[in-house]
Image 1 (cartoon, rainbow, N blue to C red):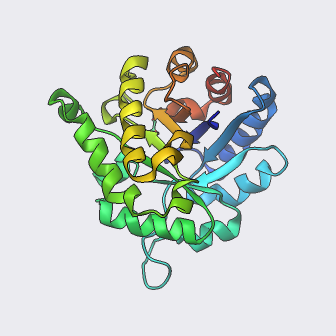
Image 2: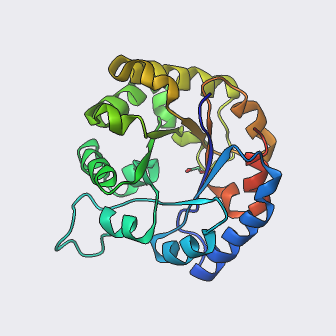
Length: 250
Ligand code: PGA
C-alpha cells in the first residue's frame, strides 16, 4: 500500500486573509474524504505563517511552492529552506514547470534546492513532465527520464524514501485538457521503472501524483490507476469543495 496524497498548489492566488479562510473551509469538509488520504496545501510565502497556525490540529500539512538554492546571505528577494522549516513548513514543491519555464529553474539549481530542503528536515514534491511539442514528438519518456536522472539520482536512499513525485504534463496544466487515465498510468509506470533503476524496490513505495486540470469529475478514474497515488491540484485547490471532492475520489 502506497500513501494517498492530494496536494493543493495555490500558486500566486489569494491574499493572506483569503488563504486562512480557504484553509478553514478545507478543514471544515475534510471529514468527507477517507482519513487515510493525506492533504497538503501550498500557499504563497506571504501566508505560510498564518495558514500553518490555522492548520494546527486539522491534520492538513502545509508546503511551500519554492525555496532558494542557497542557504543564506546576500540573495535579495529569496526565501531559504531554513526559514521555511523554522515556520513549520513540511513540504516544498520543486521544479514546477512554471518555475522551469518562467524563472530559469535548471536541474543544477534543483539539485541544490533539494539538498537544502532535506537538510532542513522537509520533503520535496518534485515536479516533472513534458511540454505539448515534446509529447507530439513522442519524447515524453525521454524528458521525464532526464528530469529524474539529473535531479533525483543525486539523492541518497534515505532521502529518496521520503520523496514525493508529481507528474504534470505541461499541456494539461490550467488548460482544462487532462491526460487520459491511461496516459497518466503509462507514463507514471515508466517513471517508477526509471526510479527503480537507481533505487530498486524502494521505488514501489514512492508516491507519484498526477497534476494537470484534475477535478472532482475526473479524479476517480485517474486515481484508480495502479501507479497514480494522488494529485497535485492547481485551480481546483482554490475551492474547498472541489479540493475535497478530489480527495473523495479515493
Ligand atoms: P491545474 O494546475 O490543476 O490548475 O492544471 C496543476 C499544477 O500546476 O500543479
